[in-house]
Image 1 (cartoon, rainbow, N blue to C red):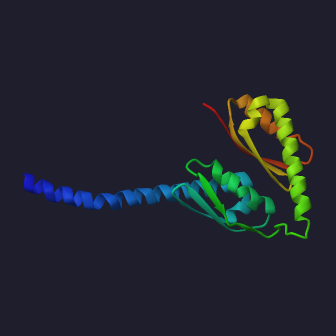
Image 2 (image 1 turned 180 degrees about the vertical axis):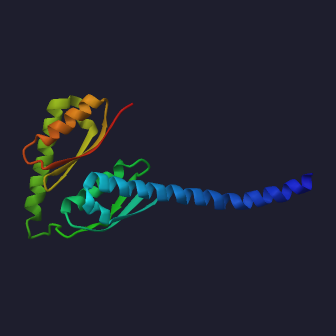
Image 3 (image 1 turned 135 degrees about the vertical axis):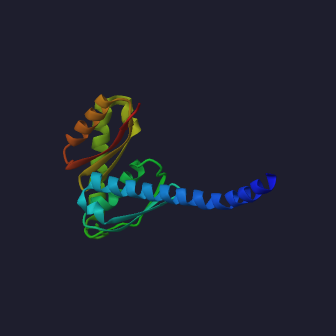
Length: 177
């Protein structure tokens, strides 16, 4: 009996890395698909042009989109997906702002809008606003982080949308529990 067990164990040991590699590859493919779905859901059809590769916690985004804000906020959306810890954003935007074409002025406006949203959130949801990361581009604001309850989530979304200059709010918030 022992003689039959040894060859089986050797065969099992030889096949195990192949099987686990396949499972790992499937998990990577599933995460890449989840990132792609989240990009389209949160950013709209323009994000459908973004290709996603995923391996070992890192999502690599590539492709061409039309809007600058789609390119800029793609990283935030990818980080929203479970399992993604790092993002390399190689996406190019057709309407990307360049130095000398108002990029510095637009970045200043974005930073001001980001500060306005942060201040408004601080007034409305208090210390929990520190758990919310805010990114802005061309008047589009993303809110990412974890809030303790649905009421604060709804208030954060409503507050951000009410800030002067905000065109759209992308909800990347999660609720604890």
